[in-house]
Image 1 (cartoon, rainbow, N blue to C red):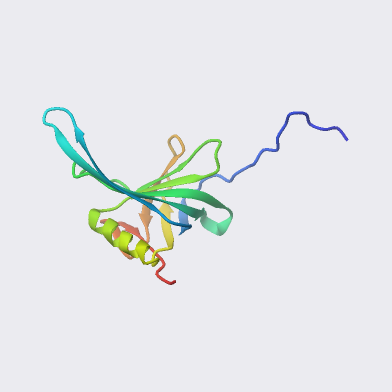
Image 2: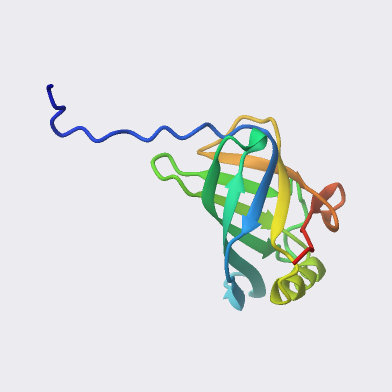
Length: 160
């Protein structure tokens, strides 16, 4: 039997498709609070707050589950428009996904308390049916009970 020299078997990952996705937080998180001074007339102090955590992210129809990273951020007061709840990023040659979500400061505090007491483990989100740009898909909504912005919701499973 002939052997293929130098060829590694290619892993074929499914395409990212719009629809209702679900995820599970897999471990501890990193929470970051910071501040930076932006130069320029006038100089401005900008606070940033975000958390990063590992997750398993499952596509609609449960065809495939990716390992992934969730980054939940609070926007700065300078950001006034919120066209969507976040983005899902997929690298061209790497299997992990990156889910980036924006929440208000109050919602961030609520989520932090739920994570500390291990009451937030499962989550759900909807990818909009839009073309992707550079591997980025728009998250149009997440499910209740924590509203992210008007019309945008995030959800957790509060069972232990």
